[in-house]
Length: 355
Ligand SMILES: [Zn+2]
Image 1 (tube, rainbow, N blue to C red):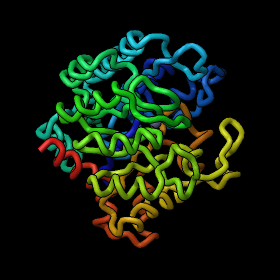
Image 2 (tube, protein in one colour):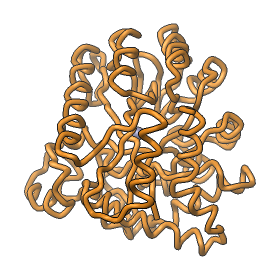
Image 3 (cartoon, rainbow, N blue to C red):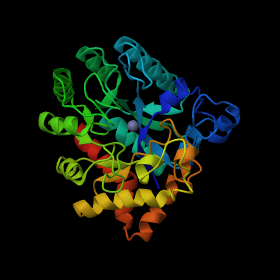
Image 4 (cartoon, protein in one colour):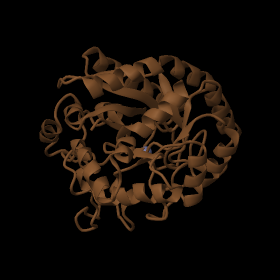
């Protein structure tokens, strides 16, 4: 079934993990044998051949670069200008990979319909993978003029926060209201008709953003706090407000967000019973809360600095997203519901946002 994945960090993997994503997952793993600089070396699950194999013809793909102040131990750049330059390197990779026909930037309604038609109607194994460009964490926007420049090259969604303190908004594992710069960013995003990605906003910033921002909101990769109690996940109150705003929420496949009590670097998926069924629990919770299956999708995050060691044990590569429909059938979801979850809800959102 045609599938949309609303969160992948493809260019980060190309530029910081040095992965040639045109190669298969297995070739990339082989080349990384013996490397120990990242926890997911030789354990990656995402590459372009596996996206094709999984019929994943459209993704939301990020640029991502954090700014860190002295004393902040998170990985990141020491100035906003360096962070901006890193996102421009990531953009250059997307452009280079487009030039060899592997991917195609989708930034308006016409291109969206062409891409959907290509993947729904044409049979060939060399189809380009469409990507909508999103910025995960806004630290790299040196000024608001940089946001407009980014819109011009194709950026269509922004998540103002990531982990920890941010220049515009504080994120996961942090607290604190939006500063003036953060409020101004949201107003400028609204003017440019950019999508707000509510994912990673800390609770204070989330509620501020819901007040200030009147444009289109989604949550590209977010699970449920009632199942895994941490501020990375949304509470039922947050989910309800997002739904009122017409949001779609993408279920994420990062093990620590799927099952409670996960300890990074220690827990093992099999021992924690972390399998694809757990994603169904999160998706089903949102559907039961809302009373329909119109506001959930997939935002796998499967290349977000983790691989096999921190994802469902019954997933070998991202192509295994194709096992989700059968799991939803077992839970009583209709064919129509399943099509909506696999692609229809994201498409409806995008058609409305860009219509
Ligand atoms: Zn993320």
